Image (tube, rainbow, N blue to C red; front, top):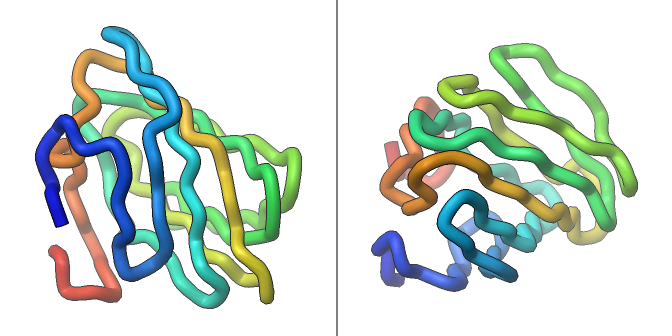
Length: 119
């Protein structure tokens, strides 16, 4: 699996993501999390993110605080804020992620915790 900054899609152990649009100041991804799976607890130094759930339900953790989310809910994540999303449903959890900042490479992910040994 390619992990370079120009990667357009990936199938990590928790699901999949693909880049829908990439410009110099923002990037848009569709992210799908499989039932019972979760992303690493992570943060970014060079971008902020906005998520909108388009299907499924989940639990978002932001700086240790948890909140339930469902279709049409949105979440804003500032730079350097620890965050994660967990699929707590029986169907896929899909959200649209808008990244804004100066750099959008996958190497700007600082993993604090990870279920798949990627810290």
